[in-house]
Amino acid sequence: MNTDKTSLALPEGYADWLAQLKGQIAQARQRASLAVNAELVQLYGRIGHDILQRQQTQGWGAKVIDRLARDLKGAFPDMRGFSTRNLKYMAFFAEHCPDGQFGQQPAAQLPWFHVVTLLTQLGNASDREWYSAQAVQHGWSRTTLALHIKNRLQQRQGGAVTNFAARLPAPDSALAHEALKDPYLFDFLGLGDDAHEREIENGLIRHITRFLLELGAGFAFVGRQFRLEVAGDEFFIDLLFYHTRLKCYVVVELKATAFKPEHAGQLNFYLAAIDAQVKAPDDKPTIGLLLCKQQNRLVAEYALSGIDKPIGVAEYQLLRDLPEALEKSLPSIAEIEAELAELPDTELLGVVEASNRPLGQ
Image 1 (cartoon, rainbow, N blue to C red):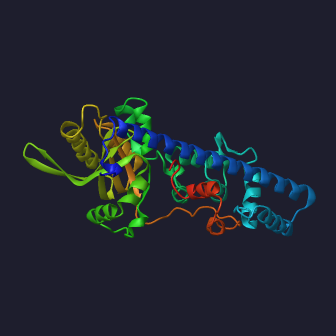
Image 2: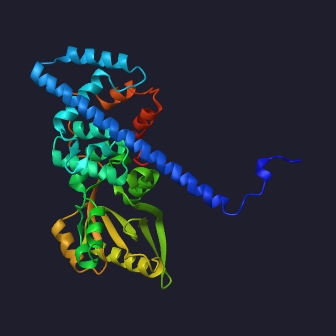
Image 3: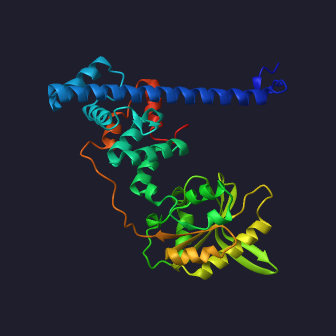
């Protein structure tokens, strides 16, 4: 008699029920991880507040912090996070974030090393609030957060010249405008300023993951040199994307020269063709992004004012000219992570691991 369980007939609806259970279990694990993380950040804040208070009232110095680290490690040998370095971070957190929030954003919604990154890489409270909100909204990993801070995303977001306000209904126009930036940073390509359009395009495809990160949340790659046929003539779009949040196609055209008004006319034609031949009935109007080596904003504004389709114009940079992020005298996050590399406590292990991957995973 065959007793192999896989050969038994499953009742109707079992597969759907199993899928539901898996989803519920995954959600419960996620909630538990987030709850443990929030408790950990709040604990670190309380410890940091106590350290700060004693430093101010009793003149605690480095030797006392070293002794506290040894005593806490001795009392809780199965936990990590009580090193001298991390205790200094806790005090720094308490000093610069006394209410446990970045503006209206609770710090406990972020993993601890996200919090440390915000505190040590940004010197302005409003900047910390903006980046913390973006990290929670988009589920940035700590590495992604640090990269966006280094690349000054806040200053570039929504900086492109567009005609969206006149060509798209609200609130779609505002959302589309915020989806574009100026300038775009392509220094990861390793190309010089004399690179040709096809070189840049090839490089962006080779580094498509990094390119998508620079484009921002919601961009999904559809194809390069996307072929269109209009009345027997062939045309090829440099890059075609679909934006999952705007619910529309995005045509990206590269120009290794300064912006010229005729560039907008060519892109306008491509958008009309995509709307007629590719766009689904429930998709929103296709938008265009013209990436140029240089642009005169006033010329771009004049050119777009007479264009029917929604288009944005922005510069790209192949060589970085932005200043590096702020540096603090505190120990690096890498040093702290090295000390937290082995964590016997399974719950806290999940929290530390979560600091190195997108939120919600």
